Length: 189
Image (cartoon, rainbow, N blue to C red; front, side, top):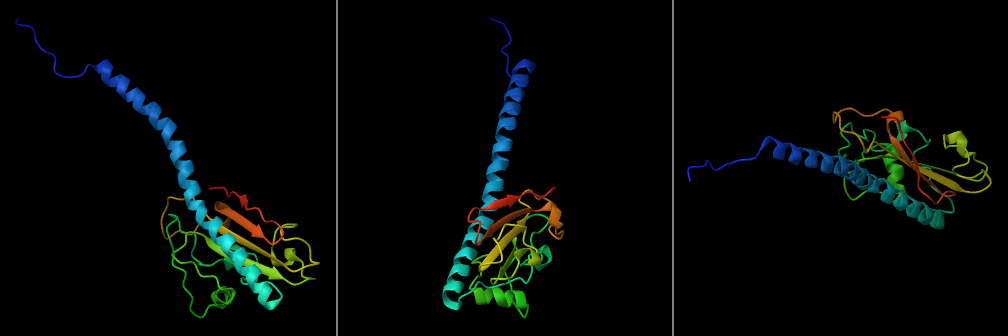
């Protein structure tokens, strides 16, 4: 027997393997991205629920909710540099900033660095929520005590860490004393 023994794969076999790997990748990547987005969004959901509990405790003690941020605007979010362009973490620092002082008064301080920027406003009966920038109907009417909170972030970010996305590029998670269901408004990346 003087026949040659084949050592290797044929071109057809290699092409079939590449096609199979491509199909598996096409299925796996969107699923992975969806799970990644959900895990990054979990911070906002957990901390907004914590803010809700802190507001309820504050009202039980002082008879009203605390207006932490002054107005419901992206400019008043803390940390002020969140979200980062690469959606990395930022420390929750204080200092002499009156908004951080109000966060401390509410008793809210994340246990670790955060990816989202947070805003909380509140009002007494007679204060129209929309006068502080809260979306119409979201925090109820002006006949009762109310509060509204938002978390701004871009879970799909992958850019430069020093770039802070514009408000319209962020997803916005909302929760209020009236709407006890997390509302998510998607930005346009």
